Length: 92
Image 1 (spheres, rainbow, N blue to C red):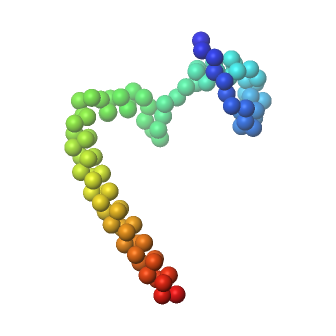
Image 2 (cartoon, rainbow, N blue to C red; image 1 turned 135 degrees about the vertical axis):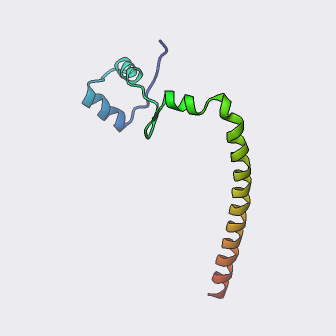
Image 3 (tube, rainbow, N blue to C red; image 1 turned 90 degrees about the horizontal axis):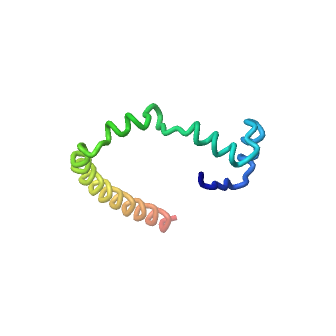
């Protein structure tokens, strides 16, 4: 087992007092035993099934054009916004 050092914060102190995890080894064991990988309602198994290597190419075909378009549109938007704000400030 590797040694893990937790940063001493007020949050860590509160957790250690509440859950009787007064040593780092108890805290590490508790964290390891209750480790969870969740994002909203998706667990690790569902994530691995949906994002397997087989669907990689399809995701990239969709994502790359969207990223390029989004980058161009955001650049134009920010440039127009800077021009508008600058012109209004120069009038005032």
